[in-house]
Image (cartoon, rainbow, N blue to C red; front, side, top):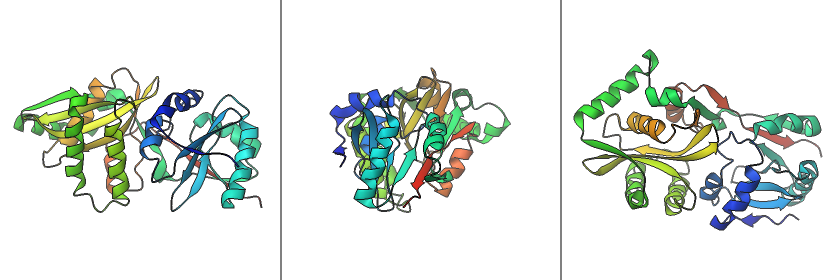
Length: 295
């Protein structure tokens, strides 16, 4: 059977090397995403025929990424199919790389049922839209930001190691009122992993302070040469305008070299979906499940 191993920080150069062989447009295709969510989703990895295969398992589902790399992806896929059939009695491939879909369908389409669920698709925006908030459609965002700037003495800075404790303290405070979200402890642990390994994960973040106290944080990284992906954004909503301002400042300052900003999925949470649509995405990056239908 395939020997899937636990993900460790020291694995980052190896895994990144394989991930960089495809054109990454989806938030799952970052080492940081895999590392911080590795425990709740049993994310493990293996090299099969010189291809990277990522294992995922939760209480709801089990599957693997379609093999990524310059090795024999088709032979690797067959190995993974046989392994999962023996291990779990079923097989689901998660297809995260857009350029994978055509040849997957050409070689495996008659054996798998392809599905897409809107809850998991990533929202992608023009960097210039989020940085400038120009036009009538962003009128309300600008009003909130204007109110914040008039009322508070604030600063925005790129996050340094000296800010990490304040970032985590703010998140825990923000988190205390979010009990309606499922798997809340998993989200908390993911943020502990992120801020506890911030430098090793090579993250870039921005922090908004009022009179020196943290009120909003955003963290992300380069996904591809044209796209920044945002992994984390949270704010103290007692400060009107804190969310739109940290979004704008991060987009303007940390995302300036990029054409697009990927702000990840909405997880089917209605409030989050409404908030993401309110910034008018220019595209949705689809993710696919391919479920084995052969006996």
